[in-house]
Amino acid sequence: MDLLSLLGFFLGIMAVVGGNLLEGGKLAFLVNGPAFLIVLGGTLGAVMLQTPPNLFVNALRDLQWVVSLPRIDLSQRIQRIVQWSALARKEGLLGLESELEREPDGFVRKGLQLLVDGNETEIIRDCLELEMYAKEQQALHAAKVFEAMGGYAPTLGILGAVLGLIQVMQNLTDPEKLGHGIATAFVATIYGVGFANLVFLPIAGKLKAHIRKITLLRQVTIEGLVAIAEGENPRNIELKLNGFLE
Image (cartoon, rainbow, N blue to C red; front, side):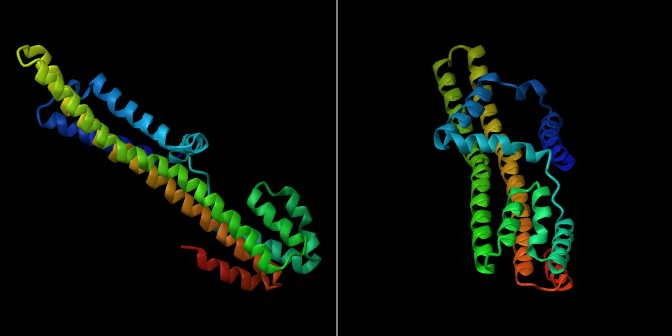
């Protein structure tokens, strides 16, 4: 579990709520059902209209990465590649068939299969780089869904504010309804800006950071498998791939 994400979320919320309390406000002032419905419902509706169904579903599925990031260990992948290289030098490329059967990662499995089949290095690189790029773009589209939410939310907050002011103008002679309309107007703006900057845009940034890590892992895999295909020394492969480590 990514505790930093949870801590950041609660810290951001508490900063807003705490600042409101320090200014003499009340927690109840920030709770407004109509404003919440306008901003969140309108944002989701706009994004659903903009986004193809499969990309929207992928975005919701990838949301779990924000609090539960899959473990990505570059050094472990490098060590496995070095082991594959040593095995290939000892038993030939066909000796990697046993590793192919045990490999859970589909991308790595495809690379090993290309290697075992004796393909040229250019073919191995082209096939894997094409798949890496396609998977990266697909994942980035999911992240862009939350970026779009971050763009729509403040605008829907302004829309909520305008609707609240319309209610105010229609009830200038009724003090009770006047106060409710003003509250909806200002709280809708807070919700729009708050959701965008405390939820949607940070989620998009977190997903993009994770996508970059996955892409880097695949780049390491490609370089390692190509080096094995070229018959490089395992020690040289390790030295080369260690350049990817931070």
